[in-house]
Image (cartoon, rainbow, N blue to C red; front, side, top):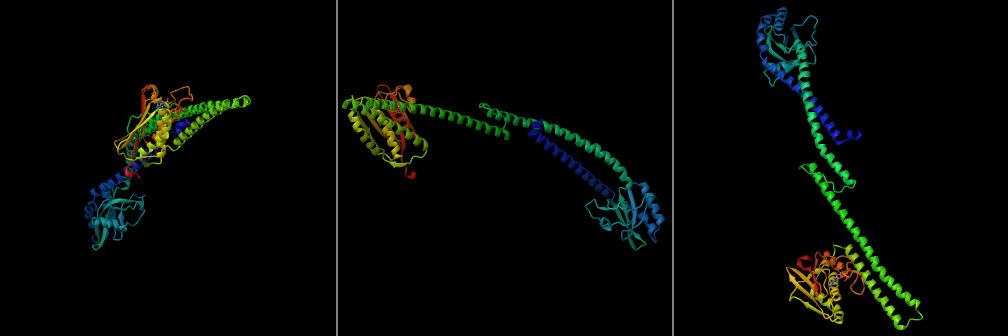
Length: 493
Ligand code: ADP
């Protein structure tokens, strides 16, 4: 119950009902005022000439001296005929000279302000022009007035209040019932109808918010597939759409995090494996030397030391590669780009591998174009990528094989291909060879190949250069790796 009272629906409904009440009161106030003003205006306009027409009948009582009795009689007579009016005779200062009232009723004022009377006589508009009501000081009413001559030389006024006290009493009774019956009842009915319709509409509108809240709560509790239905094109639907997108992003990020975590676990497991084995071997060799110190001859001792050295070199290489990968991971998007000649770089790399190739009797071939634009990349990293590919080709190609490095200029880009006539890679292994620690030789024997990081490093290098590497291979025929380097456009510096 408490939560219901605090709900958005209840707050919205309360504001709506308060506004409805204020509007209703304002409506009554405006209707009453405007209808009164309309009524006054119509009354005064209809009776505009009333005083002028009546003034003629008073002339005979004012010609020589003021005949108060005659005037009073005439006023009484006229007020009986028309109970809607009150008649006063005023002198030129606004003092009331004659009027008719019930014996027990007294006037509250003895004078009437002449400004409105004069402006009426002069014919000023707009109506209604309001004048003093002598029976209620401070109250103003519509009137009709006309000039009368008193004693032939003084200007007096016949001042007729329209809407007499008697009329007011009757009108107030009728008005009271009109207000209660018509206005308040009508307003009550229309407000109730509006309130019911409004509350139903608010309930429908907030229903969608309730659905949204439920979905968000479920999502928070772990139901990650929950989404808000988006059926319309309004602000609430936009909010729902934004939440759905946010939820998608959160889920994608969580998947990504899980994947990264999985990779990290595998990485740690692989590193542990790759470190434990060589360290155990080194330990074994050193223990043998220690235990058999007296019996080992020089040749045997040298054999164990060489084996230890060999494993240490492999370890050193592994640690170097790991370090390099972590460096590449940390500075993913900022290679230090510079223009350089790929042909020159290739010559240097080939010089480095020539002795090993000659030793294995492998033929190292190059195919270069006559002219080639400069590449725009980090030269040290590209040298590393190229070296990894040639190193692999040398490792997996048997004696008398051939390794060919081709460079081509294709569509403003430089295409590098390293192909060999080696053992090749099975088709199902091809998508995996760029993964960290993936080696086709599952035994992880140290006799062939490295730790399975070379191609992962090469791919990473090309990734951060916004390029990619592809591989084609056929078992016992050979393997070709190709990648693209962006050429240098002078405007890039
Ligand atoms: P490694 O250090 O073991 O060579 P790489 O990441 O460089 O690791 O290569 C991953 C695997 O891909 C290797 O174990 C090897 O089986 C295969 N491979 C790479 N290059 C070649 C190639 N030129 N010919 C045949 N197999 C290759």
